[in-house]
Amino acid sequence: MIIGKVQLKQLVQENIPQFYSQEEKDSLTTNFICGILEISVTKYLIESEFIVSETQNINLKNSLENLRKGKPLQYIFGNASFFGREFLVTPDVLIPRPETEELCNWIIEETKTISPKILDIGCGSGNIPITLNLEISKATVFAIDISKDALLVAKENSKRNNAIVQFEQMDILNWKNKNVFSAHKFDIIVSNPPYILEQEKTTMRKNVLDFEPHLALFVKNNPMLFYQTIAEFAKEHLNKNGKLFFEINEAYFSNCKDILEIIGYKNVELRKDFGGKFRMIKGELFAPNF
Image 1 (cartoon, rainbow, N blue to C red):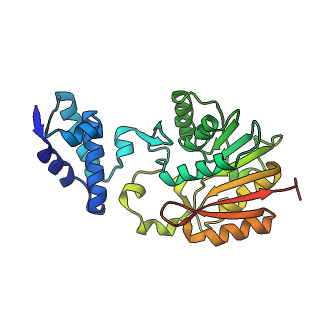
Image 2 (cartoon, rainbow, N blue to C red):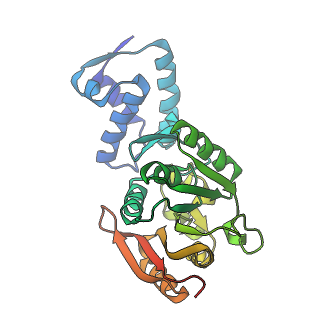
Image 3 (spheres, rainbow, N blue to C red):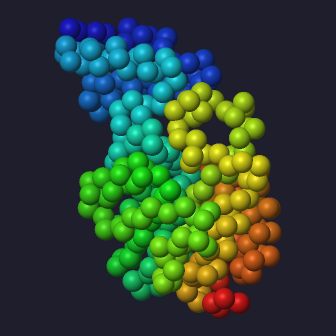
């Protein structure tokens, strides 16, 4: 069948939930149509009508229903772009975000150690450890997550992107009792941990709340729980001059800074993301176990 672009755009926009802004709707429409028809953005922009196969038409109808429910495109199509690479995403992992690309860029810029040893805590889809392994020369990279299902996704992404990452299942909140890295030291430890309080659920949009894994999003009572725990873990597991990096909630940037300084990290530095919000922090450990 042949369908005009104007008609197709209208059909898609009618199925996008109202909580999206018009700018977001326009972007979603373009990406949705390109994904369904498997065409480039350039072809979408220059063509006035499209040939839609029977299979694509069935997929269009099913995907429109998911779109109407607020399901993110990354989950509809099963993939997301991160640092110029494609990653498998399922409801077992968070969708990789541009802010996290900035965090990876910062780590890459800061890493001067030859053949550094790196650990990512709470790896999800594996976007951070895979990126660091591929972008930092001779990096030995480890990653942990509490979720077995998330680790399956991360391992598949590692294979797809020809990365070498050692994945382990571990509950970082229980690291003092069960620590798979008890004999390891690292040059870099990084984490984008859960930091949203459960009582904040009522303020969140359905596309996140109804579809992304709550285990990776929410923390009970104390938004600093993971930052405190990981900073204490890192103090025991960083080499001399090792560095700890976090992606943070902009609402708690000063709390994060205070925690790192109290625990004993030096040269604590906050960085803003492209939106002008403090979303990243770094601390350095000058001497082991001080």
